[in-house]
Amino acid sequence: MEDYHLLITRQKAFFRSGQTKDLSYRLHALEKLRDTIKTYEQQFLDALKLDLNKSEFEAYTTEIGVVLEEIRFTRKNLRKWAKPQKVKTSITHIGSSGYIYPEPYGVALIISPWNYPFQLAIAPLIGAIAAGNCAVLKPSELTPKTSELLAKLIGEIFPKEYISVIEGGVERSQSLLKEPFDYIFFTGSVPVGKVIMEAASKNLTPVTLELGGKSPCIVHSDANLKLAAKRIAWGKFINAGQTCVAPDYLYVHRSIKNEFLTDIKDAITELYGGEPLKNPNYTRIVSKRHYERLQSFLQDGKVTHGGSTNEEGLTIEPTVLTNITWEDPVMQDEIFGPILPVMVYNDLAEVIDGIDNHPKPLALYLFSENTSTVDEVLNKITFGGGCINDTIYHLATPYLPFGGVGTSGMGAYHGKGSFDTFSHNKSVLKQTTKFDIPLRYPNLKDGLKKV
Ligand code: NAD
Image 1 (tube, rainbow, N blue to C red):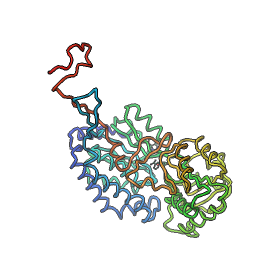
Image 2 (tube, rainbow, N blue to C red):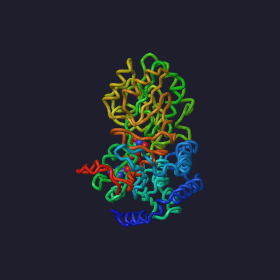
Image 3 (cartoon, protein in one colour):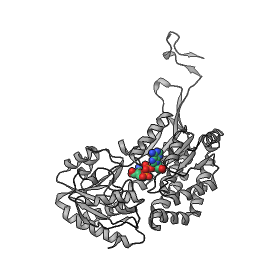
Image 4 (cartoon, protein in one colour):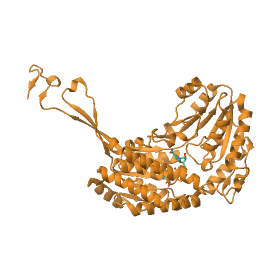
């Protein structure tokens, strides 16, 4: 196994030089990152095509465009976020003032997954740079073309002691995890999240874990069905369902089930055509192992739409499964593919109970026109974040911190959330020397006295 100790030692020394804390250094680094991403844009689109058969439209809107917007937003607001913040002091602290100084942790490790291999590597890096950290980025080995290009891009614009990319798989990741990083930001699966947290505990390194799970999508009786169907089909089948916040399964109210199933079939056909597997731009499943895992779910319930597969191309048609219960294999773990199981409910209480009996979801989506239904769901179900009458869109605004809760993760990022995640808030009380209030001292008889 490689020894990364020298690299981390050099990064720590570079961090201690103070250069990365300088605001103009950070802004300039973000500017260079933005400009080089633009230069490499076509190469990244090509790499994403080779790694996952992503179309240029999808690759730009969900990976490159999102990251460029995040850089723009961060550069615009960074001076404001980085300023020490003056806070109130209580009456017992008269004469003093309180400040919060955001400061970088030091050297951060960012480990990213394969499903949005560009966005999920660069978006946390923007936060690390903005907050003034050095960083080591470990992209996923399952998307090698994108990983290689990320290493090339970063290597070209940043010295290794500032930001480095270490390519490779589990062994390299585990070797890195032995080093005493000052922060670890991990995006990936729940089981690996546990490995990361255990490794971090050895050095008491703080972590952000962006994990996954089964994200429910509820279609209530009063929903705008046609629009719901279109927004659900988009959020579920984008990237062939390999999205951490994709609606994993549907809970549909019995009274509108038949009408809604027709609408969702129409929506799928509208978005992907009659024969999606023949569409040269239809995203493929990342590996044979994942393809086989997904294919086995096609035995569950009844295939109401889709169901065709292409082993050679590793593609699976957008598929809707009905007659599904919590006991089916497809309902045991996050699906992470273009298969949408549908369960039916009579009463909202059943839905709340069903979701509550399972790990806390990363996302939840509710389609309803009724405020009290919305309030009831928001009040009674815990989840990382989500949308009312939409899917996925909540993670595309830098004004909403994005993250999970319980087994779907801890911590959040995007926009100021990213800056906060990679910053320690140092609390400082500045005390007056003009007078001294003796109340804290054991002997009170002198009262207020001049010093
Ligand atoms: P993964 O956990 O298998 O791998 C993620 C990263 O961890 C990769 O870089 C991999 O090399 C590394 N890794 C894998 N096993 C490791 C180990 N034992 N020790 C140390 N490092 C290890 O996840 P994945 O398959 O790449 O991604 C899919 C998962 O990620 C899904 O569960 C999905 O929900 C989740 N995800 C979450 C988010 C989010 O923002 N919450 C975003 C995308 C994906």
